Amino acid sequence: MSTGDAELRAAVALGDGSIVGAGYARGAAERSFLITKMLPSGDLDATFGTSGFTILPSAESGYDSEAFALTRDDASGRFVVSGRSFFDWTPYSYADIRVVNADGTPDSSFGYLGRANLASLFRKHSTIIAAP
Image 1: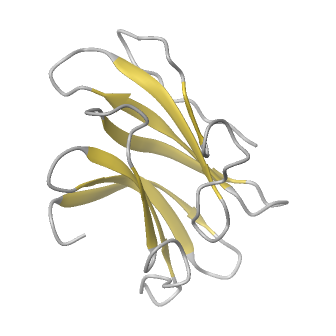
Image 2: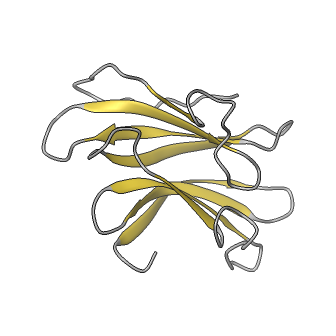
């Protein structure tokens, strides 16, 4: 993430002292879902995603995405991340749910390639918290 900015908006503490957080990362263009894992020392866990984080772009080309909520399924170790995908210049947004495996990879068994983008336009966005 050498370009742009990032912000965490939700976090889950794990039993081993590590923390998984979710929010957004902005590269040169759109914002994308960001999921990151930090060790008890505060360092990124290099075994999670790519070098400690996973970037999940919007399901729709040209949309921004940002995560607001995060939960963990203790039985499977998967993480459920919810937020929205939107165009900055309009009042419309889509509810967006992503599921990632314990290692930070998208869970392709959920929705389409690990995501469910609720395809109805909403004038106002409400965060959805889902459990697998």
